[in-house]
Image (cartoon, chains in turn green, cyan):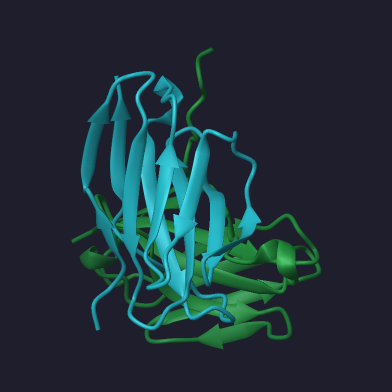
Length: 115
Length: 112
């Protein structure tokens, strides 16, 4: 049968603006969360991660916020640059043997940065 | 340190054929995971290997299989290819205990 493609959320910003990409995760037992950036023709590239015992973590120009109460994750990118244009994925991972190597990915968000 | 290397970069096959994809993890990494990425389903976990043993498996039919060698290099095989197997196949590696996966650039498989 005909498959239905994912309709990815999109975010368009101007260069220099701050960007916020949101993600809802599904498993309340997940204890590790990670953000990846994927550019066209490339594999996902690690941005930042956070464990469930934290609610905020900062990196270089990026901040991840975790709200376990509503199962929500967000990625904030400061002073967004054209090179930040890509698809951004959040992913979650549970604990235990059934999660070896297994990340459950969100659908992704397309970020476009206009010069 | 070299990243995760996947070969070949592109493959074109016809229905019914089989295909083998190769992955060399980052030096020192002993865990290799495979993912399928399609526009319709997104990124989906196939399986994970550590020290030549499959430790975890996703919800894919038995036509999808893999193995890992003593040097941690891994291969995945898809038999009796179907049109729906057209996808980007991604390999990722990690030391073993850590959760952060490092991905290769993938093999783009087209089934005609």
